[in-house]
Amino acid sequence: MSVLWKNMTNFSFLPKYLSYFKNGTICTLVIAVLSVFAAVLPALMLALMRLSKNKVLKNLSGAYIALFRSTPVLVQLYIVYFGPFAVINLPSYKLFGFIDVSMLIPGIVALALNSSAYVAEIIRGGILAVDQGQTEAARSLGLTQAQTMRYVVLPQAVKNIIPTLANELVTMVKESSVIGYLGCQDLMWGTRTTVGATFIPLAPYIFAAAIYFAINYPAGKAIECLERRMRRGDVR
Image: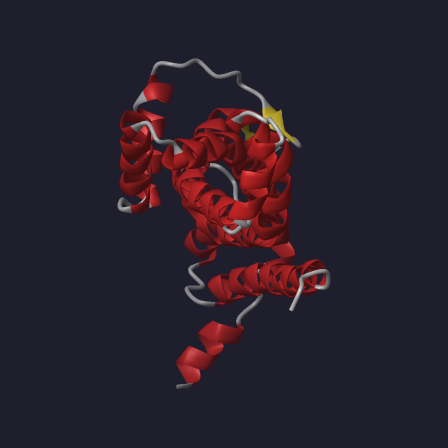
């Protein structure tokens, strides 16, 4: 028991390796934000395809969503990195002086492809939550189906989408930990490097978990507050 307690409380690595955790946190946040934003446009296209009456488009979208939701994100990351990006020459540049762009971009692409499958269902659910009467009223005024979607349905669906999309961002902060396997210096890469250099097996992971908690818990509370504010105008 005393050995376990010592492993849990041995933070002697911090003075030397704190920069790994600081830089890793920055990298993790950059990856999470860029991945979710990169996922929004393809997710919108997938959602509209799923709602389309065209069976080909509907089936293609459904197959994409099923594929990316049914396979591990780490496998998808390796396929993207050793597949398309094996033949694409990316610039040798380090963002903020420590984030290798040649590893960052494949990671963001893989995470965005994965996230778009989930965000597509979020957008589809938000669109379906809009009262059908709104669509019927818009069509009766002479708007086309595309105009109805653009000017009437989507603006109202945003209210349903934003809180859940924010939750996807929180989820992405955790899922981005896989990008460290490419050598990108995210929070988990810094943690594993610290463990390997110091042979302290537990405390670095506890410290990393505390950082993830410090990011995600306040973010989750902020999202709950946002949801309450957006529900104030709802008719009960």
